Image (cartoon, rainbow, N blue to C red; front, side, top):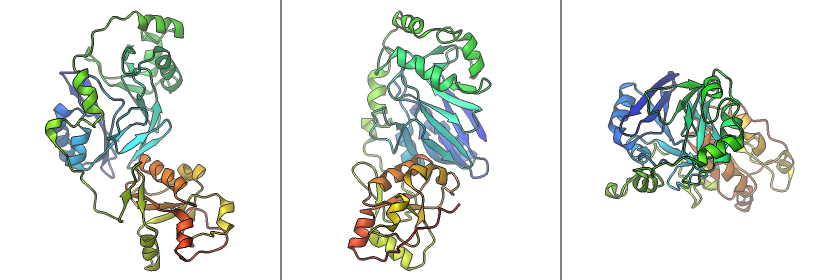
Length: 367
């Protein structure tokens, strides 16, 4: 995996660039608005395609460049579902996976510094990006933005210290020139959370801190809730990929495609997308039947099936009425699938429009 650690000296913020060396697909963790030209130049020089910008939380000390990068490079912004940033393209929850090429990052919800903190863990458990939840020999403050010392204590002990001891931890900031630590080091030497500190000891320590108000908070937080876009930016049009289907997003962000388009493509023998039925097996033999071309991957098993799929191939998901397939579409987007849509209205609408159905069980989802 290609990896670069970048630094913004004015705020001592680290930005991390990760990419698959074969596919050149990349993600950028905690990008800073002030360094957007540097980051875009590096991405261009390395021949990378930026898929996602990942925020470890809604920052109070710098403004993100995620909105501008979406405009310039077509990347998609990723923020915790608890972060409050309605501008984001993808709202991740605990356990969601972001894929780029043959690599993946697991999102672990680690609140305490803010309510929406996320730690991103590489799928080989060798690296984790802790944002401000855990710093090198320190941790993020807990006195603003829904901060909660008890929550932070459990986030670190339950979600970070449970990683392998040799897992390398990359923080959101460092003010002493340090670049990386490990789980083992922080367990031993972190003066706030290491050495077997109890929850009550940690909470008392954090309550005694008398910290100044972050200098940039009044600008940074409102801007970051808008993905870093400022008033002077005006309306920034989104860069869309070459459309693979006439996809429309609902008010809740679900990408949908009309059943008529699906039927037209199937009638023409198109194999340009994967059609997946996420209903339970007993529903396939009910009154609504099934679409012959659809694979079967029940929603609770979707992630296991999708782990073997090529995320570059478009996916249309369907269910009875569109509810479960909507959730499935968002799950697949969070997992790194670039072109996903839920079939609007599901099988109910398909049957109402008198489109062909098949009775009996569908084949298992293919690899």
